[in-house]
Amino acid sequence: TGEATEENIPQVLQDLHGFMRRDGPSSLFDKSVMATPVTAIKALLGVVQRSNASTMMGLQDELKQARSIMIQDFEQGSQSSGKGRSLIALASGCDLFLKYITRSFLELPDFEACRQEVLARGAQFADISIAARDSIADIAADFIQEGQTVLTHGWSRVVASVLLKAAETKHFDIIILEGRPDGAGARAAKLYAEHNSNIPTTVVLDSAIGYIMESVDIVLTGAEAVVENGGCVNKMGTYTMAICAQAHGKPFYVASESYKFARLYPLNQRDLPNMGSVPLRSYDTTTSEEKDSQEIVLPDKVNVKNPP
Image 1 (cartoon, rainbow, N blue to C red):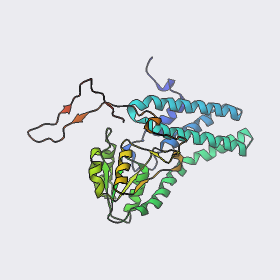
Image 2: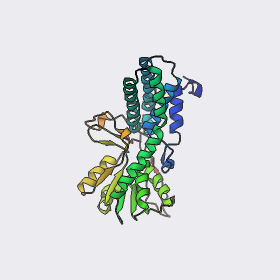
Image 3: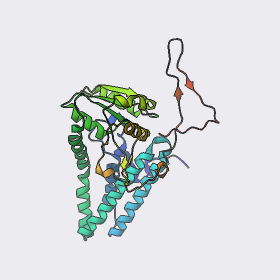
Image 4: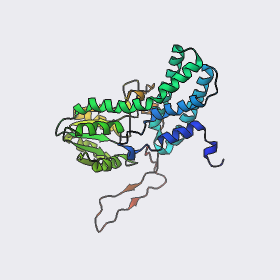
């Protein structure tokens, strides 16, 4: 029992939380903010730096223990913070790093030489990940044509890079779904509207996806993870958007870095990590001067499924 303090939180979690502290819609255009798999790799690099292991097996045991600590932290937080999606991305980053460690040892059997090589290359990984976003933007910007309407969902730094790159030479507008329950899409729309790229931005209710789809030219989203069956894990509502896009014959593109490729083969939604549920707050927004907006309070016997 007792409150968690910095003293009793494992160092690998302190590192991870520090790397992720600035992650969120407010960091949409901040290239220095790292994606979840990269933060996992950076945290594991800290384990390698602090390790007193004298053999590769000992180091791998420490890294696997650190991986378990980070995964458990995300699993505990997934019920209320939406970490269920990021859990897959975190695991993919950890697995990628562990695989790299094993391969490095095969190339450099001397343990200390291998350890120093891992630290040297790992320090460059954040820069490589940022360059990956720019490379994706250079390629994907050509998918957006003059005068088109682009539909997106939630917030994604990769998608933002693509849109800003395309806006350098073309005029187009974007539609963003509101993104309940955290309003991520609305927050992203605010940032796009305030950005000097001057991209015309519209926010649409999540439930109006079918209504708006006929006026869209292409759909572009990011991804928390890309799984082995070709599916993408992203904010709740992306699946619905993809089905609507298919029904209307609209191109649907996902922009994602390769380090988000996860070793997971889900057959259905239940095979994905539990996203949990947060309290549902509903309002009648069809207000007028005579009718104030009031929260609709549901009785306890009504079950609520509101994944974050």
